[in-house]
Image (tube, rainbow, N blue to C red; front, side, top):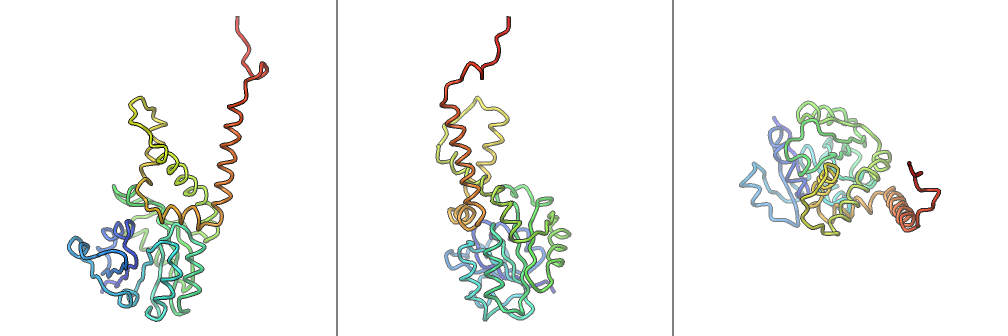
Length: 256
């Protein structure tokens, strides 16, 4: 019998996961902020209340990172002993701490962060990477095997701290720079270079991410503020250098 999976939070990424998971499990879904009825027509998904969804064999937490602790407190009495609970948040320290603190000791916990989204995974997810963090219960190897063998993902086992430390650069800077360029509202351009087009591909890959996701990446990772400060400090140094007139010593020598 296929495992029953409860999906809590069906935003852009939660819905994106359905096509890849339904071939392997039965999925029930709950989202208090969205009418999920259309999903029952498009996918073989059962819409149930929070208590029923939380009582499945595997529970995937996909609400905004800001709500993980609240959701864990809500479901703690409904999650059954031996169940596996995973999150898919872009930050790992805060969700891992919340799951370990608020869910029963009888529940296995694994943190996951798919290092892709609906835009970058739109052409298929095989070969894309997913970070895994051990919580408790010894189920990480099982999760890693499923993700690699069944979904074809490249798994990266790490710690919550190391994940957030590296993602402060990888996502913190990517989303920050992309948001700045979106805010600039660039005009249509024809005279582009390959380098410029590559940069705009980065922008397009995150342009339609939710405001909640952007704020989680920028505000819920304790390493991001320092990275952001370093970025703006470096930008000011470059700006000040460009404002200074070139001296004779800095000019290339004339050639005869």
